[in-house]
Image (cartoon, rainbow, N blue to C red; front, side, top):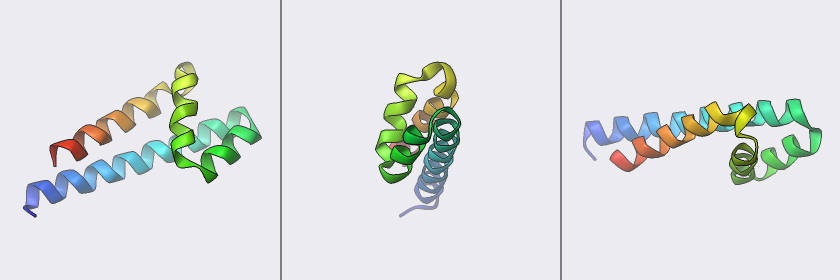
Length: 73
């Protein structure tokens, strides 16, 4: 693996992890059940983000940036 691909993959994964943590924080603030489901099932956190774009739109945008970085790698 080349250095640029490894760097893009690392930053992409770090961005996805950060977006998941931000979604966890936002879902715990809204409701205990949302937070627990988002913690146990990480893809559910992104589903929550899509339903609540007004509150979690920045986290979803950050996840899209992470996916683009991974795709570029």
